Length: 177
Image 1 (cartoon, one colour):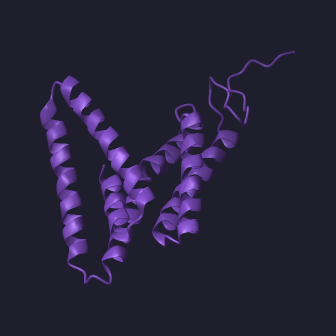
Image 2 (tube, rainbow, N blue to C red):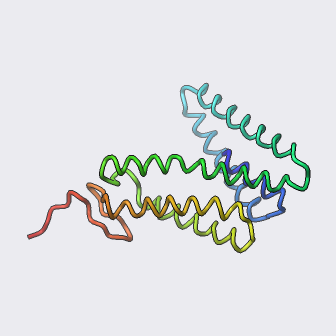
Image 3 (tube, one colour):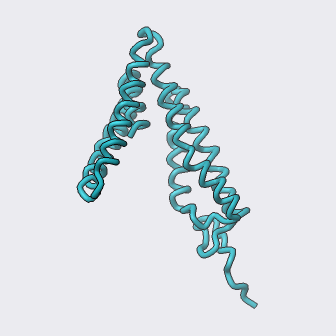
């Protein structure tokens, strides 16, 4: 939610209708997801605390951007949006470390990795085509983590399932004689 809010504001500031449309739709869908989650969540105080924290982070970032002169506001917002997206890769870095420690990619869903890599590649190309260095930089970082993760499937195959597209058999597959 935080990253999407940052990219939405950057889109508004740069008059980028693609960013505005995509991030508005994403935030709308995410709001529906949060509402459904809140409905079924028995302990809503944690969710409320997380939402308040997220809104405070967004508000502080927007105040920081607004403190810049008009000439540098777009750049400040782009830097914050790209930086937040790069920080958001922390979970993927954790999964990479975990797979190396465990010696298997059993718990890293391959289909999701392929989808994220394709999405990052599309945004990278979009950033190049539109000349938006912030989108390019953020997605170079994402593509790098995607490349590392996808390479892990070769070095540390899953234990029980075949990696799609690469057709890497499971580590515990029985050898046919």
